[in-house]
Image 1 (cartoon, rainbow, N blue to C red):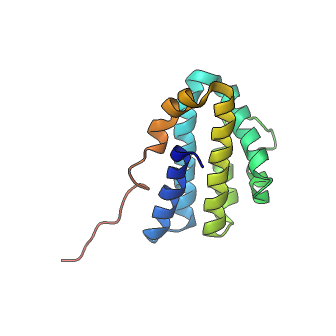
Image 2: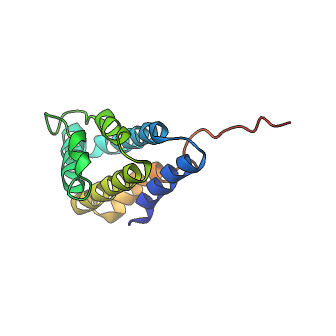
Length: 143
């Protein structure tokens, strides 16, 4: 797994370690995909982003069939329907959801590398993958 994409697995597993459930994983997944889209749309366009995301969903569904549920009826819709991924993931066991989401990011990363190269992919997506945590942390309320 590419080092940057490995961060997705780490972030999602951190959510679980904090005691938050599948809903938090789904929310963070949508945030990550939105950040990926924000980084790439200026370079590959909205249509390119949508097509690449849909292709990654299709390919990743070979390992995690439920990802097909995340594909829009109008495949390649603009913008991609990231909430559909969250809805599909919300019906899965936590470990299955994390594995599938990570596979989806890996597949997308591989497709993007083939399209624009590893160096540019790394530079464009580095801010997305270099997330310091899974989001807000619980505050200790003990005296």
